[in-house]
Length: 92
Image (tube, rainbow, N blue to C red; front, side, top):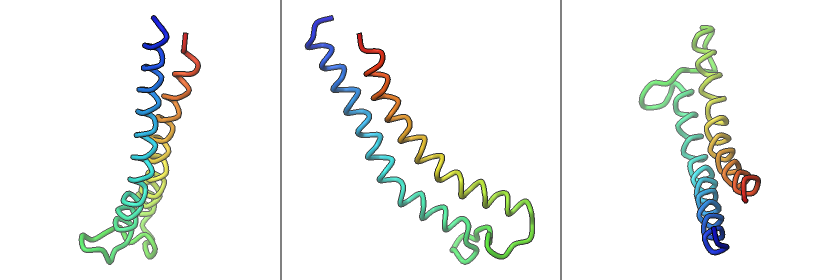
């Protein structure tokens, strides 16, 4: 493959990774808002009442909901980093 095609492949991979980073950062605030609404009982659709419950199943659901936010955003950012690293390592 000639150098122009390789440069194009790098550019496309880098643009895809940058788009994923921007999407992850943009979605972080809305995902945080939805997570807070789901964990709060005073929201319009009910919620889990995470602060005042003694039910272990509700506490487990609150924990998974709270941790899921981190895993979703972290997964998007890790995927973007994976694209960049894969292009650097497997170039050739």
